[in-house]
Amino acid sequence: LPPHGVDWRFEELKTLCHGDLEDPLYLHAAMLVWARADWEFMVPFYDMLNHSNRKENVKHKFGYTDNIAEIGYEIIADKIEAGGELFLSYNRCKVCHDNYDWFGTPEMFLQFGFVESMPQRWLFDFARIKFDLDWKNGSSDDNGTNRGGGGELVANFLVPPSSKGIRLLQEELTRLESFAATYRGKSFEDEGIPKHEWEPLWQYYDALQDALSVVIQSDVALSDDVWALDDNWWVKDGTQTAEDEDHYVLPTKSENMAQRDF
Image 1 (cartoon, rainbow, N blue to C red):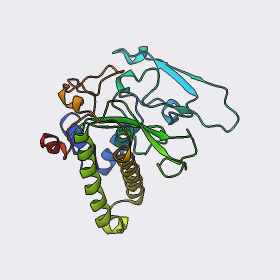
Image 2 (tube, rainbow, N blue to C red):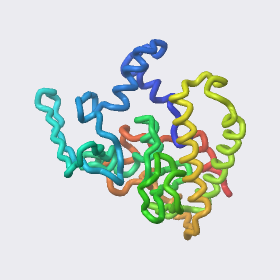
Image 3 (cartoon, rainbow, N blue to C red):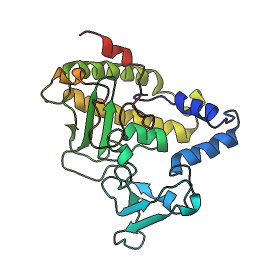
């Protein structure tokens, strides 16, 4: 599922961490660190805070040095009612500046294994389209998918989209619908995938399909100017650029489509 695959992350575990990918205990431990660590550190309580860009009620800051004894976390919460849930933004927090531009819904799913609720951010490098997605009425009643909040979804384009990019997303949507026609009726047992992995995959599929559909159907002025920009076309607010290695703005299987002359 685009914009990213997962093979490159497993390759990192092999080459950088020298991990045994055939060892289920190692993989489980690696996924826990991947999904919950801040940098390489597992921080009790702090790593239990859930993500929301709508209900965020926790602020945090930390100091990072090479000496772990000098690292400290400070967590400040708004007034929380008894039994209330603590929410922290995983990509728009005070110390998340590296993630501002590029870390959105696909990256959230890849890194943490869940589909974030609204608002969402989507960046498709192969089509050079970047937008935020939200309910038109700003409802916060969705349940982690695009289909639980009711009302109308709208796209706020962060870079003017092009006719070429829209065509590329339409082709990607057609491919996804063909994929669903083949696999959606199957069960997790048929495919040998654990249920706790199978269900989030289809939840992400629904979010992706809805995001592409909204963009393709949007009544927005189109401009091909984005194709005249360099690889930093998506950079605006953050500290990461295309040349840096700490982002996931990677070529997809559809990248070759961007070279076609429509």
